[in-house]
Image (tube, rainbow, N blue to C red; front, top):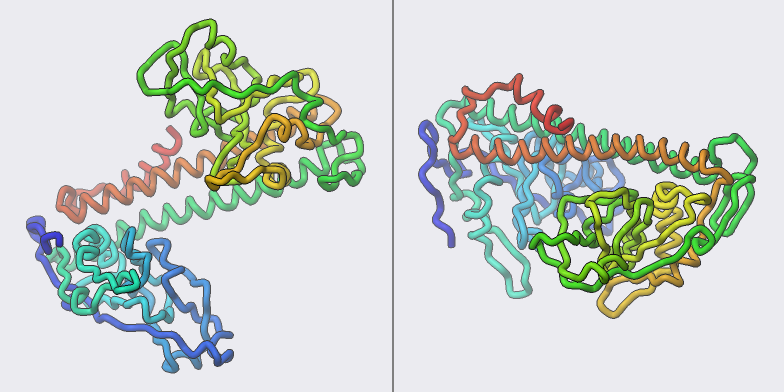
Length: 438
């Protein structure tokens, strides 16, 4: 077991949870009584414990259920999972943003005047390794935290009440920003899904539609098999790859993103020039993922646009040399990444014994793709979807910056590396935006 605590920062004191909060137990109303399960009161269970703050839950109960097997914890209470396999990997702990009921696998820690829910949650989570060290596994493998081990668990707490409140407020501020970034990301992703549906079924020329095997497409478009828009297909090299630099960067599955190559994690192959030339990519080549354990990633394709220079491609990928006078490679990549495109690929994938899904050149050749009659219309569609992809990437970067800042600041505040009085909140508000835009 880990030692119970290291020395707290100056001006802080190790304080048991029993002195910081009232601990409530939850329960489950009888499932046989339907009247208990028709209300709008959130009823929290382990499956809801996936974020630092809870706004709602999957299940809901009626006012009649309160006192008939479950209890209500007030807004600001901290829900702590105390039983379940969720404790095997992490410490599920979240602040309730409204009054909520909860089940018997969860304890509600209701802060007293010495703390706030945001501070309590942050302090416990920062010291989670020690608390997880108190878990007692049952005979059938379920993980359990006993009440006594929770009550006696000590966390570092500032002796100044104002500091505790201020730390909680700062962490709440960052959590608000991160959640807002997630909401904005979800909204832009929804806009793109709607745009994809419209663009691939209605086009941009306000024309009538016709029915095809994949659904409606514009009247002037043709539904063609992929073999009619490519020159040839080719499997990649099976040469072993390492991070040792050679003249031959080799693209692998992690480098393939929708429409583009991610050059952030490049490995290299050591082979002769006369062999390398067979696998060297050319601008406009479409690179498919041909095997993956996640079926949604199968068939994802990137367009090679020259970076990294002189790149080759690995054997888990298939290169398509396209007829560029008929199809824009970015149009093809956007279609195969769309909901109808992934459904077509998923329906033709071959499951393997190792749990992965596979495509071969014959399958790729037979994939139907709706084709506008002109490259101009294809490129106009690509421009719209690329603009939405850039917005999605921006919101993802913004969320990542905020989440990283939250984790770093949580650690530094809880260890005393940064004092709350020294924190410039105006700079804090601007930093995530500047980091995301970089």
